Length: 157
Image (cartoon, rainbow, N blue to C red; front, side, top):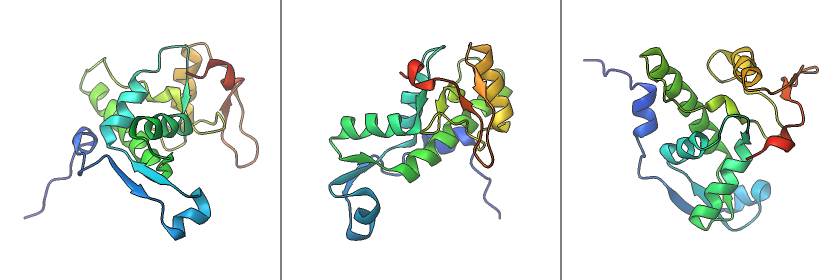
């Protein structure tokens, strides 16, 4: 019998024995340097995203820095943090579709250079609409670069 797929909210709640702090291995050190890396739990990423108030924004790198400080690690894992940001966004949309109004404001989490995230539900168009509603100006993308929030550094949380 086929196993039912987990909902996005179930994926968000599944900590899989995380968070965990690990040594940065030789192979990883070529990219991320030496020290330790925290692999966060999905709910930790969601909690940080939930704390960003209207009119402010954060970036995935800021979330990683917060996680590293919280766990005494050198860095936060860029791969799992990015995945968990996406899961949090999809879980929020799943909850909104069922009438929940207290959802994670995922649209306030940008890529590291202020770029919108094409992997969010509705793509960059939906994220841009949310951000414009909150008073942000969106600069158009150039070439392969996605649109970004103008002067995002001034409204970073």
